[in-house]
Image (cartoon, rainbow, N blue to C red; front, side, top):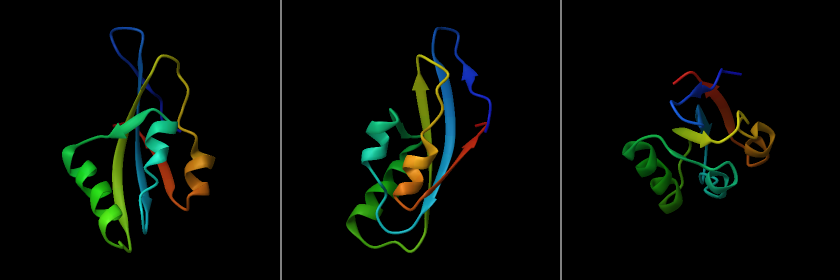
Length: 87
C-alpha cells in the first residue's frame, strides 16, 4: 500500500491504477469519492460503457479529509484490480 500525500491543507491525496475488462464500475467512483486522474482516463471509462473492452487501465485519484485508503476488496468484488500508487 502506498503512502498517501498530504496537501498543504487538511486533505490527503491517494493515487491508484484500476485494471479490468468489460464495463468500468462507475459506482465505485462515488463509493470511494474518487475520480479519473486525466481526461484520457475519463475517456477510457466512457468507452467501456459504450462498447465491450477486453482489457483497460484507468488511473484514479482520491482526495479525502482522513488518511483512509481505497476499499480494495469492494473494487475486487466488481472483478477489477486496484493498485495504489505513489502518483
